[in-house]
Every structure is written in C-alpha cells, then in structure tokens.
Image (cartoon, rainbow, N blue to C red):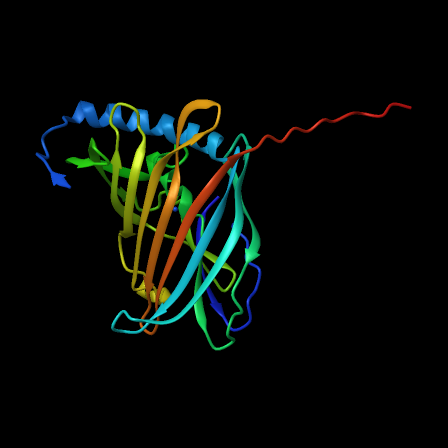
Amino acid sequence: MKTFLHQLRGKRTVLSVCLIALLSASAFAADDLSAALAHTRKHVATFLDQFSDVKCTENVQQLRLTKHGKVEYKETSTFDYLLIAQNTADDLDLQESRLAVNTAEHKKSASLLVTNGFAILELIFHPSYQNSFTFTNGGTELMDAKLLMRINFEAVKEGKSPTALLLRGREFPLQLMGTAWVEPDTGVIHRIVATLAEPMTDLGLRTLNTDVHYSPVKFNGDPQVYWFPTDAEIEVETPRQHWRNIHHFTKYQQFNVSTQESVKTQ
C-alpha cells in the first residue's frame, strides 16, 4: 500500500488507495540506534497486524489556503475507516476502506487535495521499506513524559518508497526525509514529521510537509496498550495552490472477521 496525494477538481470522485526538551545528541551511541531500529522494525510489523483488527472514525478537514496561509475554503467529512491487510510473499498488500458517514457538498469551483494512507506513515520503518532509507541518531527529547530517541531518516535514491503522488493516473514515488520520535527499548513511535528530500517542481509539487501523531489506545477487557494514529496533518504547495488536510482518528473498536471455505464434491 502506498500513501497517495490526489488533486480533486470540480465534481467529487471516488478515489482508491493503490504515510519539549532537547537533550544531548550523544545520549545514544551507534549501537543503541541499531537496537532501536530493530525494535522499531518489529513494532511496525506488529502494528500492521493490530491496526487491521480495528475500525475507527476518521474526520477529515480539507482546507484550501491563500498565498498568505489563510483559509479560503473548507470541507469536512466523516468516514468509518479500516485498514485491510493481506499477507503476500513478495510485498505488502494493504488497502484503506472508507465508508462515508457525512460529507460536505463539494463546490465545483473548489480545487481540493485528497490525501490517503498517511495514518501508516510509519511504514518507513517496516522491514519491506527500511532498506530504502538511511537512519541517523538525532539525539533524545522528552515527549509524552518519556525520553524518546529522535531517529532522522532520508530516502535512498532509487529505493522503494511507501508514498506516492498520483497525478493523471500515474504514480510518482515521493522521496521523503524527516524525523521519528521512538521509544528505543520498545520501538513504539510517538510522532513522525516528514518533508520532501528534493522538490518535485517538474511535477508542480513545491513542498510537502506531514506530521503524524500516535497515541495509546486501550479496549475494555484487554490489558494490552495499543499505539494507533490519532492525528495526521498534510500541507502541500504548488506554484498556484496551497492546501492543508487534517485527519483525526477516534472511536477505535476491535472486531474479528472469520471466513470458512468448503469444497463441494460430486
């Protein structure tokens, strides 16, 4: 599954998905970074299994901004959201499902941005993608009452990207760089910020900035604590347009789906 950006012009269409205190940067050694990456890789693989066993409510605000950053048009939509994950031998097979609960009436003259998949931007650390990035120690920072490791990442040229721009029916991989705040002993990710490693001015994409927050979630009768996305903000600029989309994920619920197959004999 890739994270996608779509530009929406005119009539709404259905689009599918094919991401406090600064302390010493020397607090963690290189060996600690390697250990933290190993924990994070394991955490993200587990996260995908857990995240595909829940559903939630997703509220999306699509904002079109003026050149001075003021909101000139806004739409708000609500969806029942779930991630569908299937294991394949060669690659991840992930799809987002959105069932509209409430959507605003779209003005034909309004040009908006559609953003999908940023709830799972931590795929950057998944075993399928981790070799496509370089990682460096960014020091430590106190966040959410915990001392977290700042892991800086940058895409390797020609590496496989978990994110893409969908433009006129074609996919253009996005090469990202940024920082993740990680619990070094568990691999739990609290926050990821990312931007373009290089401008994509040939495609009209001047800047892209994304900020995703993850928070603990507990379910009745289940002692385990799960870390799921709660907020994702994506801001994009082209030479003529400026957008900001804000995703909120709430009301997580567990569910189980079971299937049974039988073969009829004659």
